[in-house]
Image 1: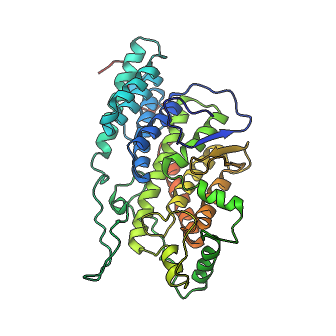
Image 2 (image 1 turned 45 degrees about the horizontal axis):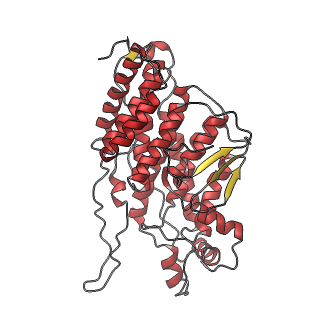
Image 3 (image 1 turned 120 degrees about the vertical axis):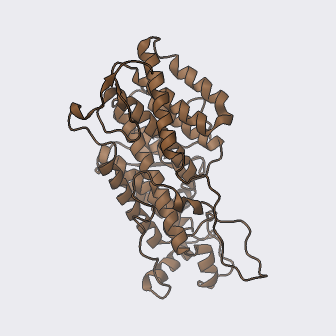
Length: 413
């Protein structure tokens, strides 16, 4: 898979061995555009996931308002039989991104013009454009007061007069963000981490002390590469995989829009759930535990420690949520080899023949990188799989009959 010229080279890419010839699809095009714009805005992973979820939901709802095959997420309005699905999807994506990133308007307008230039002029295009903008407005209104964007109010434990690190942990406010698919942020909150006098804790601590150390003699070269590879996080760590798999099995525009929407809905809620748990338990990171409980005062992890509590693993919960949605679409068994590169590990390509193997690799990478304990990765994976299953069960489900669809209309309002 080759990234388009408008996409920065620092984004990850994924490919599928023996993939079919490339095909035009505005959902894939605007997925890359949205990802590039969120990264240009330097959004943190949860905020970038929210951006991608809102954009992909808007694209899905716009196309589905024409095709009328699934239940919508946000759109409340008439069907637009005969409207251009491509125009509707492009207009919806552009309207979302233009509202979220007003300082990138020039580039977004140019991208929209390029996409629309491939769609014939006429009433179908005009109605599609109006529909896309209407859907985007409804999606933005739905998420306008969801709690994101607020300043974190985390307060570290302090002893008056004693220095504490002044780089505050990030994303504590995400525990209060309104979920997309869950009932509330704590719906899947796990039990507390292992007690410090348990055998499980002793095993986990010793494993990461040996395997996650910067100067580890136990970690292989491949394990080191994998740990660095997966320091890419957020949508840039999963959307390339979704793209590669979608291109391996060409489907309709509405089905591709639905898959991308479900993936990003589940992944965004995974962040909400994991930050609820992280700040509920405030469990110490390996760099703290090994230096104190492990009696190794100079220990350092292979990769930089994220600026938030350890338990559970955020990367693990998001990859598991994504994998669960993808398995529902492509199956849990062996599939053609799909591969991914990462800007965090130049020259390294990772390949898998099962979607679950990708999620397992992410888990291991966080241990080999020295930032998460084994139990935390397993708990994060279980949470992510429950969130992914909930997204599939509750949202964007197939209509039982055409009678469930909204009344039809064919006019630009």
